[in-house]
Length: 205
Image (tube, rainbow, N blue to C red; front, side, top):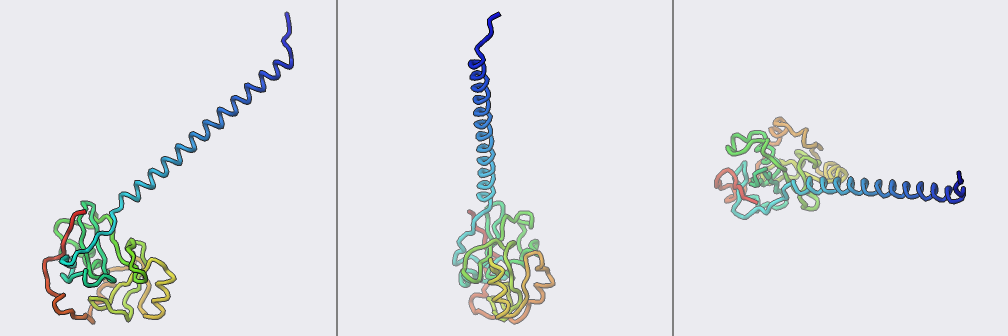
């Protein structure tokens, strides 16, 4: 029986192994690339699913006190519901009071219907997620409804404000009905702004 050329057999084995390795590497790249694309898609979907802050119109009244948040842009807060409607507030105190007794102010929604709570960073006026904000509670700085919960996106900035203006630093989960009660009193009057016109307006996105 005629034996094959050892050199040719070596080349054949070498190319077979090389092709196998190349195919394995390409398969790995495709799998990794697909996973990355899926992760990116999931991240984008999560971001898109969070409703963005809405413009608070001049005739929109606070969902809790009936004042007009458009007159107090620095203090504004808003709740956006899963159905696309929005309730504005002239301050975080009103928003938290609304949340703690929503059945009193809003017969159409419950806390389970809330998509996001937007508050304004007191330092730069940008909208931030209220559940992630650092609040300075009961400082010397008075809001439209007296003592307030003043939100910041940055902990260091909140701490600096707290050291200068007093009060207590709290996170969202720490703000209880008892905390809200401690902020009652020292109300500022704003004349015509106190005129009620419903318990807040709701606008569609």
